[in-house]
Length: 83
Image (tube, rainbow, N blue to C red):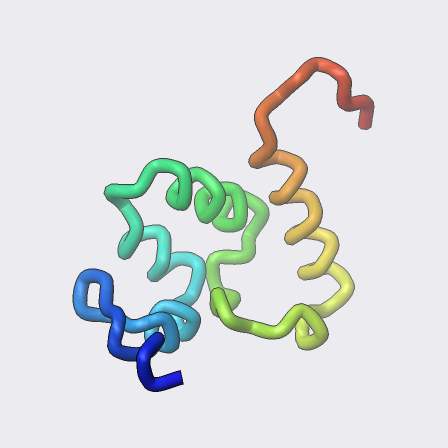
């Protein structure tokens, strides 16, 4: 809605941010470590080119698997996970 789009961070609204690739977002959120770490894992598994707002249904099977992998890799290690 219009109210939401009026909110900006570093000159970008939510629509602009969702249009960023993972690589672009990594640079954009460089000063927010928690976000940067999650984006780094996506870059590490080769998904730097996908858009933040890209619907999951448009991902290939391999891309979807790498998103799941990056989710697991970005979790804090508890020592209880077995792969």
